[in-house]
Each structure stands twice: as structure tokens, then as C-alpha cells.
Image 1: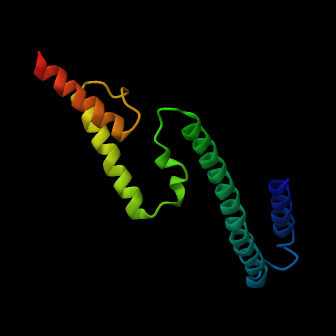
Image 2: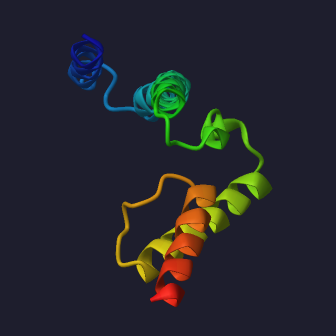
Image 3: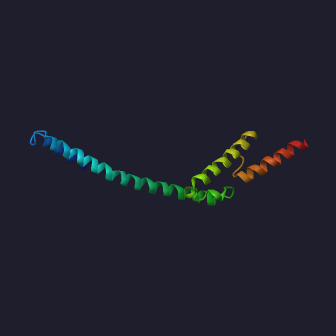
Amino acid sequence: MAFCLALALVAVWAATGPLFNYSATWQLVINTGTTIITFLMVFLIQRAQNKDSLVLHLKLNELIAAHKGASNRLINAQDFTEDEINLLHQYFCLLAAKAKLDHDLGRTHSVEEAEENHQEKRRARSHK
């Protein structure tokens, strides 16, 4: 609907070109109009993206809360400070490194569980 309305306005503007002798004012009308519309559309698009992002976070929070092995520290991670996010990133890099050492990227669900599994495997290997 919005596209059709915009197309109609551009068509009307183009059709009125000969009437206004394609003057600078005639060109200024379309330039000003498109600038204002673009400015307003940015806010509408941002609002829609924020809503979609929030819904996605809520769905992920539900999955984390419902999964027994998931670390609850990630619920509402979107509200963390940049330092907290960097710290969590370091934890998950540690988790990935431990999983890589074990040659199994999907074995653990949390850093704590990864540490426990890693220590148990070391003990088991040392007893052999």
C-alpha cells in the first residue's frame, strides 16, 4: 500500500514537470518530500526491528529457562553491559577450547559443566 502511494506521488510529480517547466522549485519539492519521508521511515523501521529483536530475545529466554542443562546466566543477556558480554564471550571461548580438546563440540551445556567434564576426563585418563 505504501509503495503504491509513493509510486503514485512520484507519477503525479513527474506528470506536473512540464506544467512547472521542470523548474528548480519543482525539483526541490520531490527532494524535500523524499528526504522527510525517508527520515520518518527510519524511525518506523527501527521500531519494527526493536520489536522483532525483543520477541527473539524473549523466545531465546524461554528456551534457556526451559532447558535443564542451559546456563541461566544468559537469560536477558541483551541487557548486559559490554564488559559483561565480553566476559561471557571469554567463558564461551574457554568452553569451545575445552570441547575442542575433547574432540566433541556438543558435549557440554555450560562452562561449569565443561570444567567438571574436563576434570573428570583428565582423572579418567590419568588412572589408565
